[in-house]
Image (cartoon, rainbow, N blue to C red; front, side, top):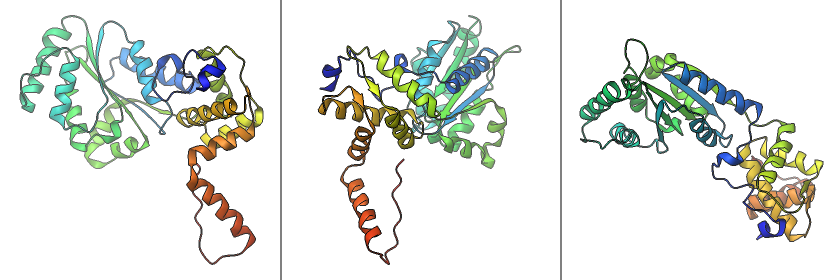
Length: 296
């Protein structure tokens, strides 16, 4: 549709975690540096947290691309598993066939693999768990226990937890105080600031290789920042709708009015009804209490 109008080779604001479209803000660069340093230094547990949509999943793909050949890894995308299912998934990622459905047998298989295959080969194993705030307290504690697998000189297993702010709160509970103390690298990924939003949009558009020049006005960029509060996922959602509005208007200049229409399109009819309610409420006082809907 609008991709052909602008001449895009690829969709610039897709919500899929494509590392090629990953904009490295200063905060993202520091997050990757902290994680790489912790992994290379042999830290047992590392954690990256942040708001929904700040790019943690995409950052994990970038992190994987920067791992040395001496590191084998397992990427866990489904944290809603029980510990046995989680272990089987990890063992599969390490190129093995789980030999049992029994927890003790699976742990023994993992220990045997790490001690006799990984360690002697000069390698280390890494487990990256996305959406880790959804792990149960019991599973997190079990992960702490298996992270004790090590030689006299270095750890054979490291674990990176990626999660929303709820992960921080969960780790502060009494049952997980030992695990929380063992997380030596903790980094919170903040949203983009106002100036970075403009750079982010420009980067995504240029990466999509458009045949025609596309411009977002300053007022449009300010409106996008107010809507998204710097969260990349929300920027993608509204910028994509803005390009549709530009296509409909046969314009390659995205202005504030297009951002407004894009926002209304995202919120749908419910948002429009709330706007009308606010308008008529100003005209005539009402005894009905009104709680404004969040625009984030």
